[in-house]
Image (cartoon, rainbow, N blue to C red; front, side, top):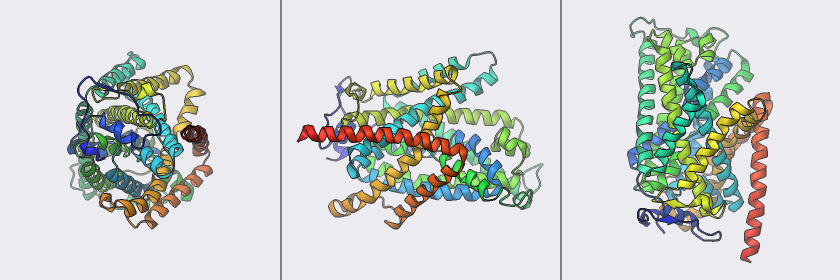
Length: 480
């Protein structure tokens, strides 16, 4: 059944989860959703999904560790992300579904794999909603001292809860303008940076290669520093997956996801690798401001841009609010898809007027609970929660790669016309990506900080996998 041929329900109707054992539960679940997203929405969701606080602030720690070699680190991890998105784009263009990689994993590996990947991603997004709310509230309370952080978090939650409870086109419009502002900000940063490097920006001198060679050289902290920078860069790219979830609610899912994936990949490489190159060329990598207040602020300040701190605070606030909006959306659609496939409580999958409102509410409440934990248990429960989601994106990427490896041969045999997007250098490209992911896991085990994240994420993954296997066996027993 074609995804685009399904007609949405009438306003006010409700659709319950499809019983387990149905041959096409994912398609039925998606047919209950509306088709309100346009191509411009998808393109900006793809770009805006990865341009966030991880780039604007988190990259500072990577630069402080790797020095100028952070450019190579971002290029390597960016290439891996391009391969992952190409694989996901291939599967999503062939079979668009709001459950995205969870649906693909279920088709390729089995229901337990879809369960594990889907719920792990739901936990990641829901916790991230809370973290982003905390970060946004800290910025606003800096402008308005004396106002409580929790009140701002509650306000942000209420706004984006309302956005996501309404028609999906409202989410698309919010995300389009949020992403547009982020793209405009980083584009302007790159233009100013290139002018400063060339020495044509008023008040600046061309630095040449002094900052790339000085203070310890291109690799000042050796291989260990480079590894830390590489790990930081990998996790900064998380967020692209949301576009394949959103594609299921677009006017033309197949064409939409194919175009969004193709155009986003080279732009992301330009934004990430380009911005890192500008920063380390203009500013000494060991400048205290890089790690303390962020590399983008340090660079704008170096270029003599007045009000650099406030400009970056506005950009980061927009990035955090955009991420909150997108993560509530992604979490709710993933939960709805899981329930439709018999992988969760039925009430969570109810769709009203084309929106999975119960899933939106639960995802938001879970995010707000994380905010409360940051106040109630800041020394034990909250850090454990952060560690638990630390490497989830890598787990998801592994499921994507294994699923694509298995489904590609099936598509070539059964429906080659669906291969609108093709993975590069298949199967070698897929195997190289899997090898790179395994290498990242090994590197994480080497570092004390990332080792804790890896072990906590591993525990979450194992628990979900065991539950998924048990559920799969019970369903098989009932069916037989």
